[in-house]
Length: 390
Image (tube, rainbow, N blue to C red; front, side):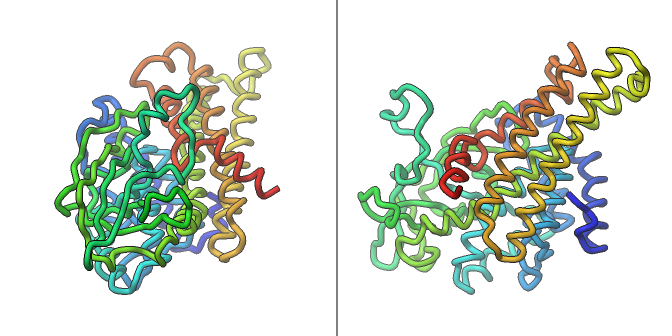
């Protein structure tokens, strides 16, 4: 991120995160990538909790750092440069907390937000995507991305809100202290029937069905969840009845830039890997065909990464200023995802045959970058969003 836009204290924090991410977090991230993500691992969350970085946007009044979106994006980039999964843990927390911060009552905020600022690690989980139906799975082509297809239900029984359904691709799901879940309050498919609700993870009726085995970001543990007659107090619902769709839009608009920051961090790590390799082999500054190819490729990679970083910074600035940030945030995620995938693919080619071996950093960067295509919605969906605003 453009450090010149940050305060002195925020710049100091970013440098501290860079040191942490490039050493302890990176080492643990490579280990978890090799063993897969079958089991939750608390090492990285513990490292972040010690520094109050699991949810850096929580206001200081609740014990958080109260970071601006600009500073948070800079922190996320540094974490992603060390381990994309570590950055995804923080961004998932932010997705879960945004509906609570925007529409939660004072009592709910006081109950749940301080948990995320403790020295011991506590996580939150955004629970949005339903398990794909058999009808969707039988159709040819990609599964439709339509929020109105959510079938998980929430209905009132006395002073309790009762939830039933199955949710898929839930980051932090098996490790969270609480979840912020999106369901519908009737059989109607209308967007006006959607509702967010806070669900403590120890509520009876929640089952972790199985871990989701991802190709990348394996240190961000991901699961499939089932909810069977899960009852929470009525006041745990967020916002007005049926206001879940617009609250979801706000949540995405405020956090897509952070997903873009993950892309910038991955791309930067891949670029620095190739640049350092070129310097070690003295492949820069000499007038040969091979060296010119390396130099040109690195120049292009650097230019694209800077452009992606500026796109994220623009979105973060508009969010901090409470401006119209929907389009800029979506564009930041879309462009940074493309840059991450292009740069990591080129990095593997530049590294050569070693880059195609399992366990090589370039290979990990490539898989992590590919995950960004579906994190917080597909690139196709975001192109539609931008097109609708042209």
